[in-house]
Length: 268
Image (cartoon, rainbow, N blue to C red; front, side, top):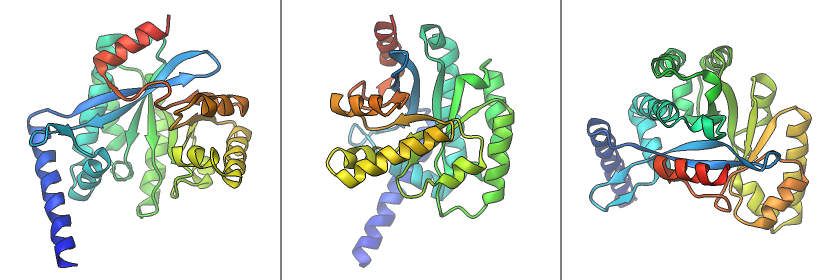
């Protein structure tokens, strides 16, 4: 047990050092995963995803672990601001919207959501870069661990008033619940890949997927399904009326230059 605890803290220290160096050296990268609009037959949005290189291994680190340590050590607000500004600068400099991209989805972690400075920070960065709120969609992941529910509620309502569209990420993964869809002005629900993958091999899971889709549509929300990897999956989701697909069938996450070229080639 002691060895496991020691290993855990060694990993956290390693990630913490990486967080500090990536901020200091400005080495945090943003990749983009295109999202296919089924109705329009082209790509009209994308999700921004953080990527950080480990100089020792020459490989990208686990983004989920990186963010987790950033949340635990208080660096998440700074990292979130860096990613958000990178996306705003990309939208402005690339003029990607001229190619049919209506908005970019940016993840906002639960710990960012409890910051009383969140709204001012995001709106300030957005306006400084000359970007409009409708060009961005903020992905919010619910978690049972956060106690400051009122601050989250206040931030979500204020962000909506500022003109941002909002989405619930990882719906069905365990934490995300219908409560968010009822209480908040959510525009998009992102169904977690685990539901789709389970549905492809289990009849009961298929019932859950179809019921989830039906419920979300009845609430008037748009649906993005993550983890779409086969044509069979895409055909199923199309038959169920899902508006957006995201996954390796269409594209893996790619850097900004490759993303621009991808959209340029595929949205003709």
